[in-house]
Length: 374
Image 1: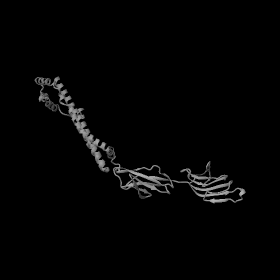
Image 2 (image 1 turned 135 degrees about the horizontal axis):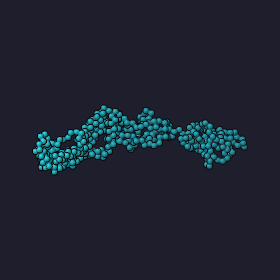
Image 3 (image 1 turned 45 degrees about the vertical axis):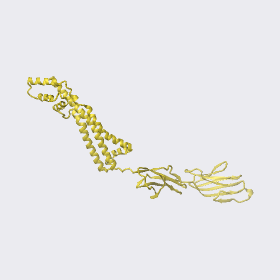
Image 4 (image 1 turned 120 degrees about the horizontal axis):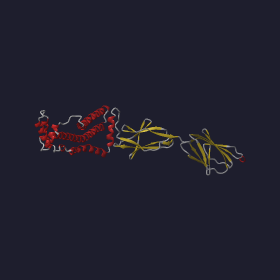
């Protein structure tokens, strides 16, 4: 019976190769159909932006279908290979082998049928041994051609070509972004706007007495016909210059927030910060003439221009707003004023013609608007 046992071993190897071929085929089909169905699910969400209920249905369908494909194409052949699930019988295998090898025909099937006879007479055993020896030389496993499984690679072309189209169109990122929405089905999502605002103005910290022009452009598939700026709840139309939209804030500026709006789409909120400038509110000069002139002191208000003899003591008194420093700038020197709260003072005896300028400063601006006198 050694020859018959050899036949049984060869049938077992045939069955393992049979299910190996099935596993290769199943793996290729699982990849093809699985990826294609995955892309179908993402495509539905990509185009329709479903609500939470719709995305839950997509997720459940995806898990059911992918689970079925995994079981049918991958798990079943593995179970057969591990003999966890009953596969084809030896007789069924013999029929497949008989179709492939003409010299085998029904001989293998008849041998197996004969071996099942419970009447094990010496004549029967001798017949089984003889028939087994005749079939021993036949390579049963060669009836299975593993290369035939690779013809199913062609089905992978469908999802691969779909991915290429998405990549060429530049939409592959947003397409696969719908995966996150399907997985997080209970999270609320809003469809992306057809365009976005690109703010082009850099510095929004501006001196209060200066004008500033803000510029914005739009990026996206859609170009709005009209763009507005919303300042203090009021919508103002922007001036279009080429591909840019402009708006000018005129002095006196105040710190304010604003944003842009078009087709019910809003930009982020920006803040214009108005910087205080130093200014002179009160200006007074006291002239103490030399004793030889016998002239009484004079007080000049609102002007820094004066004609006086040499040796005159000049006293400046200035009241400033948003002012931290005042300096007197002449041809060869710079003299700071004394400061007390918002008052500034300086005393100087003048012996020569004095042409000078007064410059005010604070933390926002230095030597702001030099005022020249003589």
